[in-house]
Length: 320
Figure 1 (cartoon, rainbow, N blue to C red):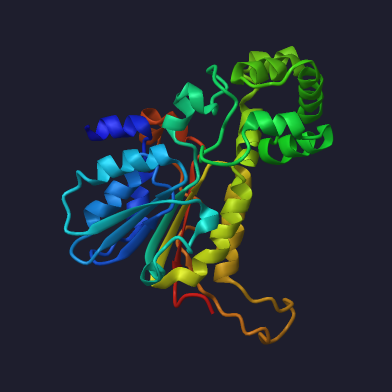
Figure 2 (cartoon, one colour; figure 1 turned 90 degrees about the vertical axis):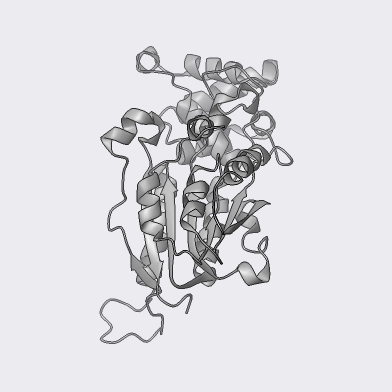
């Protein structure tokens, strides 16, 4: 399988920028939290040499299989390991000796492979079971979530995760529809949403995008998973270790931005205090004062990179 074939599985976003920001050391230890199709992982592994190690994680078993095939073709003296795990299982899923990292990457987007496969239920453009689980071994499907959630909770979910303007009318329409029969197919949900919004909204494009996004984030507990990862990162980074995080949603980017701001300026003293008394010193520095975005050339090659925002941070001496 060629690089182009693997990139059809999932094109790595901001690849050049990621590798530059990680500043990969040949003998370093690096973790890719979202292996996907192995694009970012392969680029990191290519930079590693004797004594270097890459650990690639993903909660989607299909992603790990694709990554394994890709990484096995990289010519390197370094080693690599694949782990089936979610953010909330990190870093306990690592061996004790692998918990001091030179670099960590997390691409928070959904892979092209997941979106394009009908049976995964992520796409509002294709018919399939309303699943949306990244880890199909466990957890509640989107169909099961819609069957049980109250109208008030659904409105809140659509507003928070989908930033959906018509959350109330969509939630009301879903509740009315499920009283007749369960909503179990993606096209069923798409139809319900389309009939719940004004016709002018339908003319602008498929109105179900934000509803599907909100359900996917809820089903996979994406906000909670990211919060756990951001909490754990400072404890496992070596001095000089670098973290690169790519987000695709304003809520995720806000969480990343706030975490890096806390890492850089953890002092909790009131601004008018003449000296710091809390004793919390900076853990490092942000390498990106503003998020890096995809170039026009990348957008032409990979339109799904349009909403990607990359932020990077370098730690000084680990958590203090």
